[in-house]
Length: 200
Image (tube, rainbow, N blue to C red):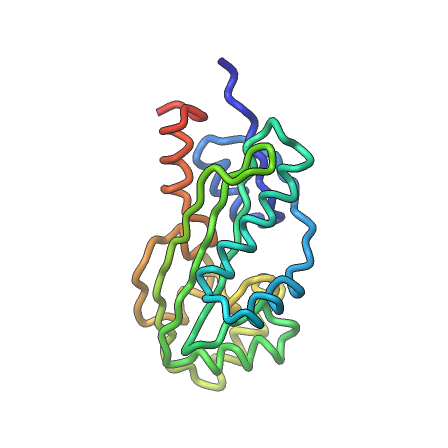
């Protein structure tokens, strides 16, 4: 039996790289949804950060699955929450500085959701959680960090990439490395193996 194709409903380079490094060959089809409007609507309903991540991942997977009903479609989303505030991707270097200053010396949660759909219907879902503590950042280091890394981190929630210099921001990390990168990879590979979609 030929294994069904896997589509990643995301333009994230790191998610695609993680899947390829695991021996998969996902087709990349970024989902086009109005994420800001969805976030606003869910915030108005007092949705939890976990529900926000899960809903966005599902909507992305469903949007692409409707177009490719025979394929398995993986939708993902990541939410950062700190002291009740949900953070979005920075709008510019000044916003990134404001966000990092707000996170400095505090512990935040990263929620990485993954939903697999087929024929427009969810087959499986998971939300991984990690807790990360950013050390007290000096003003000088913060300025230098953003000057060196802005182009790399501009699309990253939290304004860091753990696989790059961003690792220097932290004093403690509790959680799965892949979840922090935005894809609960072990759980995804496990369910694909159990379903028989990949060799195990």
